Image (cartoon, rainbow, N blue to C red):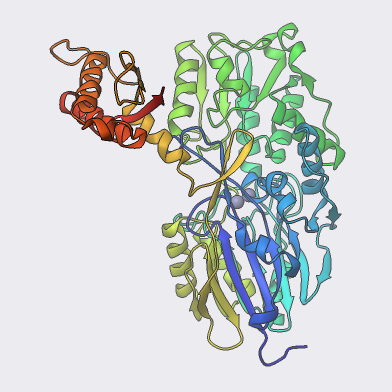
Length: 556
Ligand SMILES: [Zn+2]
Ligand SMILES: [Zn+2]
């Protein structure tokens, strides 16, 4: 039933304007009584621009506020950019979660690996399943992607049906799982689709992505022809790739050794859920050294150059069980996530220096993306025939290109939006009607902090120009009780002429203190401020950089 004041609205709280931290909400009802459905709960990875930060998560202030009206969270698939924030942030919402079996099993496995993580009630939805949450009738649509069980969602409401594509591509031979469910999508097109909210990642690339089966063929050839040891590194979650490597290994009588915890965890879940049926058990890293070089394939984590992952340690000859040597072959069955290029090159250079042959997707079809290129986007639009298309899952450029593709394919209305913009999809003229609070949270060690806090900005400043600390003791009469102490952190020792910067800071501090009227010297805040600005000015005059300066005034 639909009352005249009811509306269907949509807002991205993450993932529109960046790759990663996907979180979308759909709302139905009138403005005063909206009920919400959330889709995905992902993280983004921090780079060097955020020193000390591991992960970026969407700010869920708005969902916390609206918790009573939030009916549930549906996860499309188990990539970190879609479910990585769940364990950290679920306790703030405590809402029911809906996911297919592989995703649910991976959440459980992750929970077991992180002691102290919350007990999350999971509703397991079968592939292609359908259920109702308040005004939302949610139906899963199987999509080919680079992890088992990626799902699009058909969200039917009294105001119309939306297709939330999730991550997808068209792959008639995906190695595991069914191809993208074209029949169901065409049926939605016939039924009538109000809006398509879709993956823009590869909208800048023409044509179609090759199939996972083509990659499997190429990997099999490279494994068969390897003269000695061969290692393959890939995203642990790419179970199709894992399976392809295992089949290739079996065909040339090599054993597969798993190296890296993430690889072991995913393999375990893939076995439990049937995605490795018919594949011989993998061996663990301890046996690696005992197998003849031409009887082993190592499947390793570390395709992104992560310094603590298996491959980086092997490249530095620092792995307890595994070593490669001259003549071995390492295949990067992966692509660099933007920001990781340098770290990956460091690993590749480490391997090449040891005389190891490195094969990447630059020269061989050893990787395909799991996202749709232009021709696939056009196919999807043709099947579903949406009235409205809202590009998401991309940076501004990807979303704009996706929008262009949609316009050219005849979609009547394209709405470009950013995190925190609230769009009305129906009834009436669709478009932006409001904004809701959105932003970023950082995982900093074991804490989750707001991106608005000064912490990271402070760290960046310290990283650029270091710190000078000054400590001094001042008597009640406003006199120095002893020589001030000066300490430098991350500041050079001396200037061009050999003057010690510590001495320069010391002189500046003493002079600033002595030039203050005695009365003012009894005010510790005034003393601290005068010394701080004098020290920074003095250091800057010889270094041309202004360090952070902390002054501790002890009143005695
Ligand atoms: Zn994905
Ligand atoms: Zn994604």
